[in-house]
Image (cartoon, rainbow, N blue to C red; front, side, top):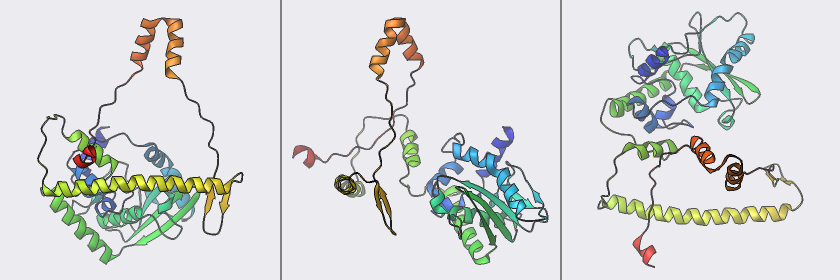
Length: 318
């Protein structure tokens, strides 16, 4: 655990391979704002997700698949919590999955389940592509391969160093580092649920003070009201289209053409417990006091979150 904590602390001082796509706005998860929060310690590191744990577990198998396709290759495992930095620019860093023993190539392993749409047989996902190139920069290695299990398919990509691309990545990440991490600016908000949660928990002590809105807030509030109205209209239109599909499909399964597949299937049956009736039945057996104690022991409280609510006075007053 100490090695992991040291690794996490070191990463906060650098731009790592997994940061690059987020900084450039090309990552499916994360953004310039999330990198800023991470580097400045504005958020606690949560437990790894099931997908992340599965990726770690599958890594040795992906390595075996890669080695079986490359006779005579000798790979070195630098270690899961080994941060490698550029010899002249220590803010450029990576944690490689594997490296050739002769340092002629590196290897990134990916196990992809829920994000298969970002991958194709010809091209890796943008975030993996940039991750591999950043590893080349950090370790000064001219080639980096990506071995990926995408669903039940094995894909392999062989990337070579590109001086123009590498200069662009270094310049943009250096500018981000100077402006936001070493400087005193905050990146633009990104609209993600993670950023909303961060803002909700940012101010713990809330007063009853109501502020006078500046003109920019008034403009945004009007636009927000318009968006809410558009959302309601779109939701109604969406449901109308779905109803039309359902009626036209009738007792068939759906439509299928060269362009699309549209189905109208019944979901699997679900079960729902009537909590009130269940508790009443338990009380008949255990008694009210024991049941209340049992319910209390199995009840957890979720902290409240702050939510934005907008009401225009002209709408309230008609």
